[in-house]
Length: 82
Image (cartoon, rainbow, N blue to C red; front, side):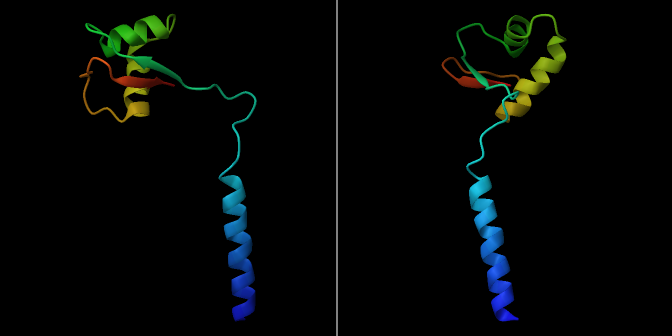
């Protein structure tokens, strides 16, 4: 019984290790980055980088991708644009 558990654990750990090196699918977009300049706002970044879509939704995506708890940005800060 102990041997079976050990073998199962090795198989599971090996699978997790291999999946850790998985690459994104061919259709997956690579996230872009943006460095904040003086006067930039999340709304302005969302409006310019996601033209044609609702800026409110883009602001929410940017905040979630960067774990931002407010709309405050610092000059020189790099944000991920999902």
